[in-house]
Image 1 (cartoon, helix red, strand yellow):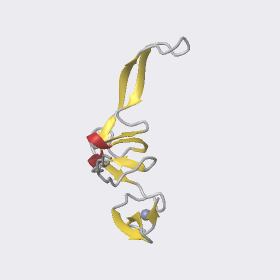
Image 2 (cartoon, helix red, strand yellow):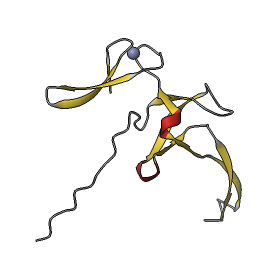
Image 3 (spheres, rainbow, N blue to C red):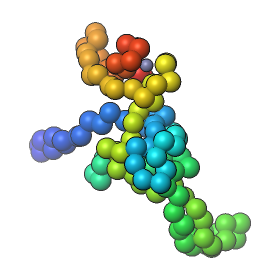
Image 4 (cartoon, rainbow, N blue to C red):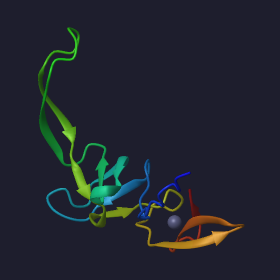
Amino acid sequence: MKKPLKQKRMRFHIKKNDLVEINTGEEKERRGRVLEILPEKNQAIIEGINLVKKHQRARSQTKPSGIVTVPGPIHISNLILICPKCGKKARVKRDKIENRRVRLCKECGEIIE
Ligand SMILES: [Zn+2]
């Protein structure tokens, strides 16, 4: 039997569905929800942020080809997590509670799910 490869997974301070604020560029201080994390690139897709035009091929008759606008990836280091409890830009502290890894907001001390 082959041993399954131990995958080294980077742990990010940002997770899917988090609300984040952009920390750089033209869209600085804009907020959006994380739609997707791209761990191999250390990037994330944020709803409505960094929109790029993409050519889409026709997939069916109801979805014709054309230019669509989709959010483009942003490097995770340029994102600040917004605490869902206090609404502030959260500095995240990692902790272990009852053997569960959790993120804690340093501003209000609440667990960020
Ligand atoms: Zn907080």
